[in-house]
Length: 374
Figure 1 (tube, rainbow, N blue to C red):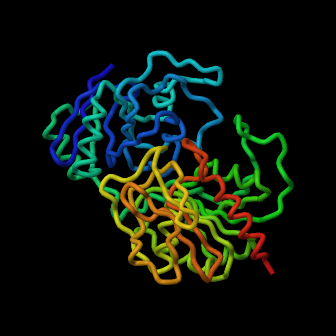
Figure 2: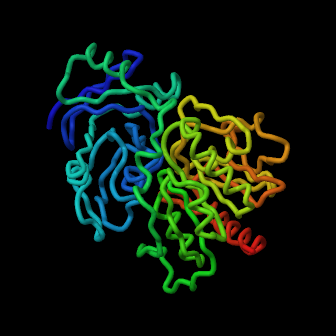
């Protein structure tokens, strides 16, 4: 196994070993606090352009299977763990984590003090990073990190969006898949900004036929489908870098189509309503984030993955904040008081993560029932 260096734009360098792959990769260095779900994390398109540090010390112990992927390939630029398990033991396993990373040309580095990385990012913020097994000159790598593109102003969503429109009807085949699926009652147009598959599976299980549209689709194309509901997915990068997508969303929403947005979709809806977004210091990533539903005062433990947030103070009076993050009081949900639209910043599809927020998909179904298409 080759020696690897992890260099940050502020001059900090960490040393480890490459347990999978080789070469040099660039990305924003972030951390995720989930104890399980590394396969879902790697295949979440929202990690496009990011190098992920997992805080849990032992990763890879149950291998990789073919059912739990959240998209067609892993999107993280690189993976950093404390120790990659030497043994992968699970009856669903089809390959090991190192095999999976090598097959997909992703550099994996372990034997790193991930606690030190996490504390560094928490103190100074997420920052640009280069990870290499080839250039082992710390000064050279730090300069490369400084010169690399960051996330601000970059349209990463278009890179991971579906290249063409398609229909999704698969309810999934995991342990939580139902024995029977109800016949479709609603047509949902889903705007793919970097969508996770479990969002699609859940909507199918609740009686929806889901037509997935690329992020570059126009409002006219979406409205021509005559959907009963409109879904705006999660995705990577800076929401202010895709004004053309915001325009599409605004036109569909103004047609009074019942709308549900998640994560990046929440941020885009915030902009469509006239609000602003900003970059968080180190983001929220993990399966243990506390969120309060302000309408019920109940607290949910949620799965999150975002580096930007909606500025609550910038929203117009007709947009009500419905959920807040209890750690930093940032926006976690909103609804429009005059249009059938709501959104959340976290991930109710729970892949990986808790199931506290599953009710939000039922709320979307109820919204379509209460606002039928003419």
